[in-house]
Amino acid sequence: MASFSIPLTGLEADSTALNTIANDLSNMSTTAFKAQSTNFSDLFYQQVGSTGAGDPIQVGAGVRVASNETDFTAGTPNSTGVASDVALQGSGFFVVDNGSMQYLSRAGNFQTDSAGNLITTNGFNVMGYPAPDGKVDTNSPLTAINIPIGQVQAPQATTTMSIPTTLDSASTPGVNSEFPAEITVYDSLGEPHVATVTYEMTAANTRTYSAQLPGADYSVAGGDAVPAAITGTMTFNPDGTLATVAQGAGAPQNVGTAGGDISSIPLDFTPAGPPASALVDGAAGLSIQWNLLNSAGTPNISQVDSTSAISGTTIQNGYTTGEYEGFAVGSDGTVSVTYSNGQQQNVAQIALANVANLQGLTMLGNGDYQTTQASGAATIGTSGTGGLGTMEGAALEASNVNISTEFSDLIVAQRAFEANAKSVTTFDTVTQDTINMVH
Image (cartoon, rainbow, N blue to C red; front, side):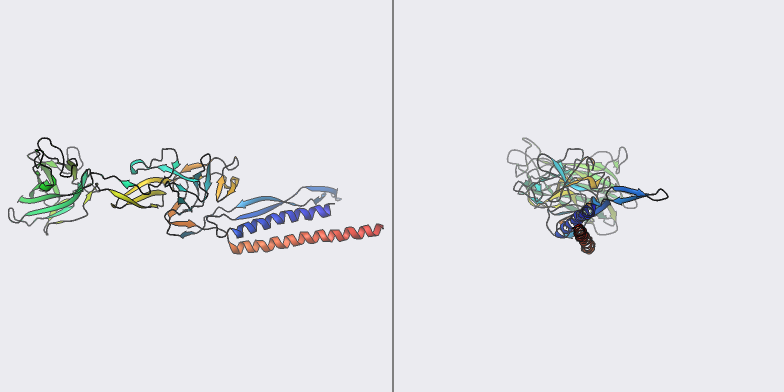
């Protein structure tokens, strides 16, 4: 009888709504959980007659669950202080891989395994773009992100250096006009050496320079000789900016970036004479480009009426051996490792993905989603591109379940269930009365 089947459809639909609400409430503390809501629609209608005006008289057959919609708005990021935790804010999903298939996830409570792989709580690899030599290559296929835990970073010899210097324009040529500027550089074995560039005023707006390493840094036992200092001449404009450089006995060249200008001076600290081999620690000789321009392309050496001094941070690109200390995830998903020598190196960039129809995704549990024909294929990119969100390292995205909304929906669903149950008992009483009338 329809009197029973109609409220039974209501009971079934209300049970689904209650289950959805219960699932939301039970996952209030689940990382990056997305709340759901159950939507109903009416079933087909049967025409039982028509009015005198010809209007149909229809009786409905009940209700059904039309959809269970997922709210994909971002939850609040909460700081955890754990380097492997990543909170995703905005659109998108992390890409994770179980070895045979890729899935999507919002849950960034990652961890590292014994091999240093960044994985999810259920062991899936977190995927990203590789960074060979510290430079992220977004044109490469996605790969499992690996953290070089316990590894040692090899030393790097200095190949460039910069010493921002202000020289005293009031110096008297030949009278206490020398100024030594020092910078620590590193050889191919990671051994530090102090390179000194000495300036001496020889005339107004004119100075000589002399660059060298200490003699004790060279090995001369095999017949090598300590190389002579690398010298040249600099001239300055009336406003104190560096104008020209003459290397050795060469002709002066304008300092700048135009054609024919000079922007750096080559410094070759290699032992002279046979066998022209090594520094005292056995490392190869140092060949360094001494940069004369700053990042803005203007000279970083000048003279003013002030005491000579190094006027900025000295910069060189060498370093000694470093041991792994930790890693961090930037807002763009770049994973950078820190070493004991003060160096940071990018090892990967976490990839993000999105789909055209979020409601078409299949939920697999553990915060994972699978694409379907309804969702469309996932488009993969990096943070901040193609509408994808950003990341916050050492933080986790909270569940977006709103307890007030859930309790309100719970009351409505409860009342609806009770009403449909009451309809069943009422129709049961009517049926019994009808049977009693017959008897």
